[in-house]
Image (cartoon, rainbow, N blue to C red):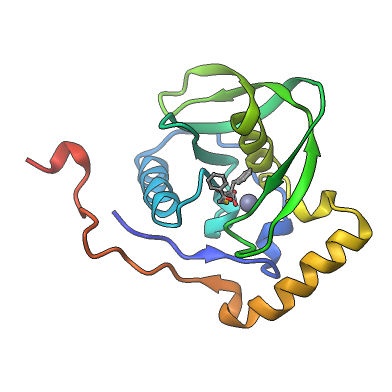
Length: 185
Ligand code: K1U
Ligand code: ZN
């Protein structure tokens, strides 16, 4: 397994739409494994393909120890409104309050090619919406008021020089196992 580089704000791929996944291949399964590993190392609860420089419409999420792969996800129902703080692995150290629907139903395909429907609220709903936005070139800062966005971008302008070429390289954890759990024995 490999740790992937994370693209940060300024990389044009974060503003592009993704391409629907039409076939689940071994290469796609390997990408998903690497995305999970990268997300866990970065201490995130979600990661979308464009954040690792890929154009496939897929993301991984893990809220409350419930790892999920969402392929071609769509919000099919949304209700309520809730404000909550968000961060983004592609805009490190910048946070903001975002108002979003409080409850959503998301339809997606899983890694076995099966259609799934997820009913979500709280942080899980927020995370799903944040990841689906990434798949359409949208970032949480786009929801901030002009003033809050300006302040977030001013914070980012002090951070961004740490990421030459818009690439965030994660430090590997020396205690991390390099094997897939099934391959450890
Ligand atoms: O897509 C990403 O950039 C991952 C992002 C997802 C996310 C965070 C907060 C609200 C909605 C979506 C992160 O995981 S950033 C890390 C983070 O802020 C966080 C981590 C654990 C719990 C809560 C937030
Ligand atoms: Zn993000």
